[in-house]
Image (cartoon, rainbow, N blue to C red; front, side, top):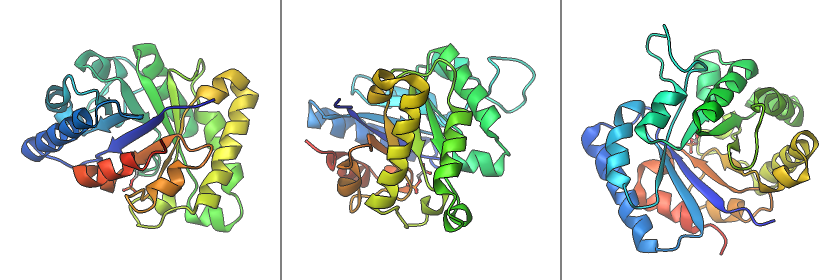
Length: 253
Ligand code: PGA
C-alpha cells in the first residue's frame, strides 16, 4: 500500500518572532510553488511561535504541530501546554517522546503513551518518537530497545490517521551521523512487523513511520526510497528552507 510521505520539521528551541515567521513564510511559499506536492509537509516550531507560524502558512497546505504536550488537558501544571491548547490554536500534530524529552525530562514510555493518548483525545495526530542510544546499539540491543519503546509508547486507539511513529537513533540526532539505509530499514521493518501484530495488517499498512537523525539533502533521497520509511522528522535541516525543501523533493515520485 502506498503511504504518502510526511516531511516534518522539528525546529526545537530555535527561532524568535522575526526569523521564525520568515522561515515559515518561506516554507509556505515554496510548497505553494510546488503545487501538487507528492508529500505532506509539517513544521513544529517552539510553542511561542505557533500562532505566528499558523498565520504565516495559512492556505499553503503546510501543517503546524507542537513539539510536546502534557498528558492532562488542563490543570495545575506550571509551564506545561496541553494537547487541547495546541488543537485550539489550529495545530494538527504534536511530537511526543522525542529523545531530548526522554533524556532531559525523564519521560518514560508510560508518560509518552499518556501524552500520545491526550493528543488523540484532543484530535491531534501523535508523532511518537523512539530510538536507541549508541551504547544500546553497540550492545546489540537496537531492536529490543526500539520494540520496547514502541509497544510501551503507542497510544491505545492508534490508527493510520491519528498516529505516526518516528524512529530516531539518538546517536544520529544533531550529530551529522546518519543511520545507513540498511540500519534504518532493519529497524523500520521491525516496527512495521510489530505494528501488524498490535494493530492488524490494514492499520499497519497505512501507518507512517518516519526516520529522523541528521537527515539532510545529501542522504534523504536514499532513505526516503526505502520501503518502510514514510518520511522524515528533520531538525537542523528544517531550519533552512532550502535544505528542508531539498529533503522533501528527495521523496520518490
Ligand atoms: P536532526 O534532528 O535532524 O538535527 O538530527 C532530528 C530530530 O531530533 O528530530
